[in-house]
Length: 416
Figure 1 (cartoon, helix red, strand yellow):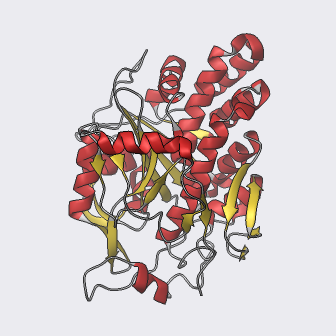
Figure 2: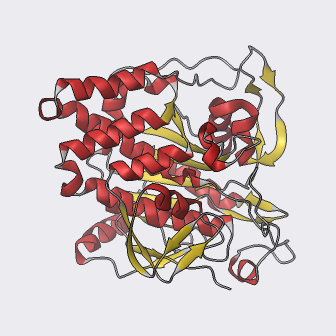
């Protein structure tokens, strides 16, 4: 495994910025690999395939067949319930609320360019919740170093692994594959998860290439030799290897922690949503097709997503969500030992809102690795007032970090 020579050295900024009880130890988080794209990319991939389907006349029958054939040819991951019984796939139109888990593996997918890696860890784990009326979407980033119980998981040979009381979340993928990560997050959140997928490093590169680059704002120069990121202050359009490096960087942003990396990733993801929703993307059949093809080629889907009708149905549910109502939020946590623990009250407030299918609104800042670039545009103010007036909306406390897809934010360079 490629080493990170400073991963165990805490920073003063962590001690200042962390919200923890007196006397709690300072933790430094391990290297979070590129995966973050998934949560938004998973949603965008589904939406892209749907657009391909409804634009068949423009794209041509061969192109559509090509995408769908790729999806159907890849082996799916069978999800299971707590007793290890296979979950039957849903077929047809998707009604009501649904949840999609998107995991980012750090295995490198066998590509020698990423060095030899001794395990496949889910270093990005994101849970997408879409409301029953398909007007709100919440994307929860779960920290890779968060200690959680891992339930008994299938071992792939008809047996099962023993449950574990306390392990870091990112070990679940190597422990029992995608099905185990899904079971772990279901147990943690209390949410049913019917759909899931895994994306590798090269998938991140291909998805960013397919969309023609993602514009990101950086408040100062960032040069991180560990991830290979090299960007200048101001606006940058990232794709390919630089997009991957941006999502992987930890040493380059905030206080150098994994938590700072999550908010940095949300800078990219929020811009990605705005890019996908733009007329430049949706009005370009070749770009839409390329995006769908990149998703089909590079995301390993659960069996429940192998049906083209289901993919299209999920996609159509997502296509009209207003970016102002797409909320990226970091799972509430606090530093503990060499990782983080869930912050119980705030976590339950967030998860109960999603279980009850209630929209959430943020009151805190964007997190350690980013900052607001500018005031919300005037066009977004009515939506904000509407959310505040809606009695169903759950207001999250100020120590819960995140942003909406409509917010323009900038990455903050590492604070020495």
